[in-house]
Amino acid sequence: MLGLIEPGHLILILLAALVVFGPRRLPELGKSLGGAIRSFRQGTHGLAEDFAEATRTPAPEAVRAEAVPVPTLVAAAAPSTPVRAPEAE
Image 1: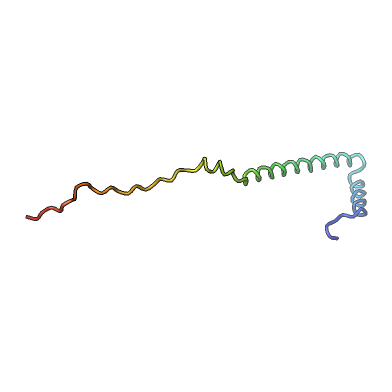
Image 2: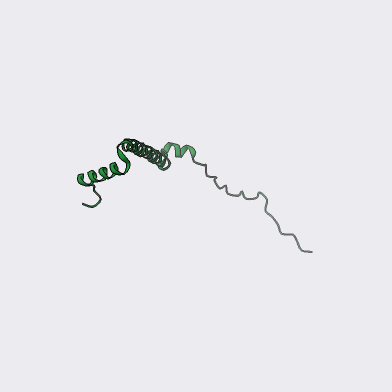
């Protein structure tokens, strides 16, 4: 299977790290790597919460309360006296 680390490969990687970094620095590197992974997970969890909050749809009651009233059109009233055209002389 592609992308999976088998136990034999993991042992080989750990032995190579032991040779390169030595027995004294290996626990220190493991601790710092664990802290970095923990920090990364907390950061991505915070981003996921922010995204979920931003994409959350408001409740229908809140939408109705925030709705802007629509102005109604009023028909123009007819003049009470008829308008006459000026008479020619």
